[in-house]
Length: 183
Image 1 (cartoon, rainbow, N blue to C red):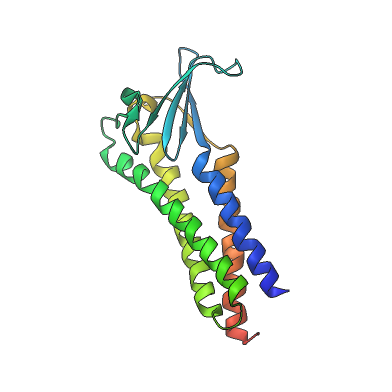
Image 2 (image 1 turned 45 degrees about the vertical axis):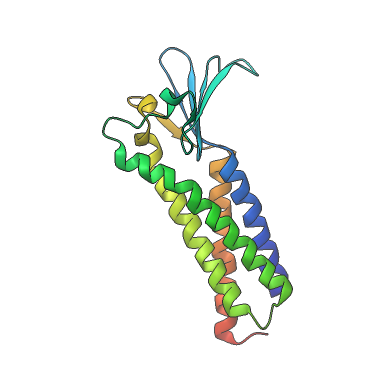
């Protein structure tokens, strides 16, 4: 039962991390009635947020592609912008570590349980760190968000926290089973 719980929690957390990598983490409503949506990789300016399928402009701030004015760092935001740019890579590493931990639990649950526990723990730390850094940096990183109240939330943001909880469970369960000598 322990191995099944570890496998499910690792792969489920990887699915949640994939959602967190792709979706929007926060929004800020501008005084002109438009909305800025920020993900771990892009900024989107939705021109008519109340209309489904509204026209929007995007910029990929990791690559500098799209409408680059949206991607400009805030005036005092060099450090938060750099931190925000690091989050995607750190979250992707957490995803890879979670997948590796789950795969090791499938392939060799008894012989490599120490390594699987270390991978689950490393994935937990990477996911937690990237989420906390994103929360701290996102509202202060981009010039288009200066002076706008930003709300963090939504499916991607919640998925990151769900993955963190599952990874904490996986790391705790595998570490505890090693300490107790369970096979």
